[in-house]
Image (cartoon, rainbow, N blue to C red; front, side, top):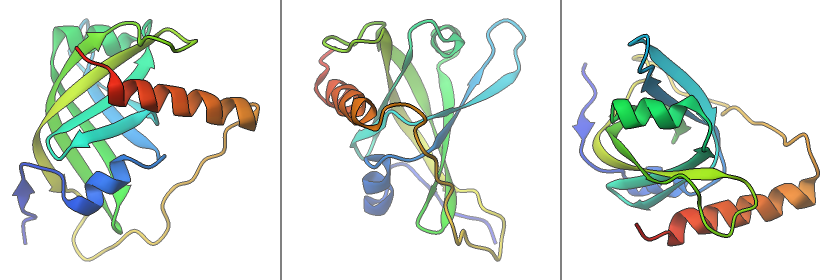
Amino acid sequence: MANSIEKTLSPVLFEDCNREKIVFLSTVNNEKNTPVTNAISWLIALDDKTIRFAVDQRSFIVSNIEAVQGVSLSLFSNETVYSILGDAKVLTKQLPSIPLKLACIEVEIKEVKNILFYGSKIVTEPAYAKTYDERAAKKLDLAVLNGLKTYEA
């Protein structure tokens, strides 16, 4: 049985996109024309059709998106795995008021699909721990997520 394809985030998926979690971002390598996947965590959903995320401005993710706008975001939510396809654009290569040089990238959602194989569910989502100063990490996370929410292109 085929999974339905939606055009927007469900309320549960919207909430999960606004919580700290591992998200897999796939772009196209603009030199080799091959897919590249990275794990990211600085991500928010502005609404049910728009996602923003931050990455280091020197990352090849930025140049990949400048060359090929199509991206895929994959994440665990609601006991399954979702693929979110969309067109990405680099809004700025320097989020203001952030101590790191981070690019702000916005994705216009085109398709949302449950991609977990039939007859299964996720029983435990992956978890991670920050390996640097916990207080500094929380402060930076809050600044970056606030910057993603409030940045005006």
